[in-house]
Length: 215
Image: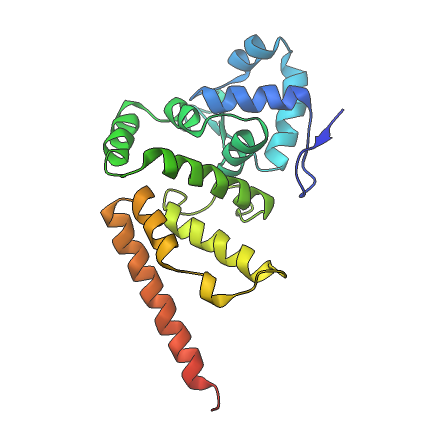
């Protein structure tokens, strides 16, 4: 039977969990690899995959788009990755390693070397994925533009949670020196420059709104 694993009511069976795990950990999962991993036939797998695709946790594409009889491969969406890390306790770095090719893995290793506190970044990334999932802040296809811009997404989630809060609605606590220190520890210098630009644009918009209101 399906279990409701989050407050958005997504029902996922044990077989679907197996499928999602396999799709996350294999770059080009297909019916053959899924059948071997789950010991299920194609028809049974198709039914479960259709549900995962309906919930935007998985998507399919042709291995060779130019060939009509090309086999289908299955990949996790951003929402699927968030679900796997949040409810299936899968490691985000392990999923990233499985989905990236050699160049992608090398680029990520070079990137993460620029982060003062990689462990802190990973912890915050996991929290962000959980919040994005629970608030269902994904597009209809289960993805988010610029998902790699973690500071943008953290700000997006933090603002939403802050506004929804009924017990701790204090604007003075929205951004402060403590938060800035944490951001510096989990971010590269280029990300911080982008984030500073984002805050500057936000300030300009707020100033414009303030000026438009009567004294």
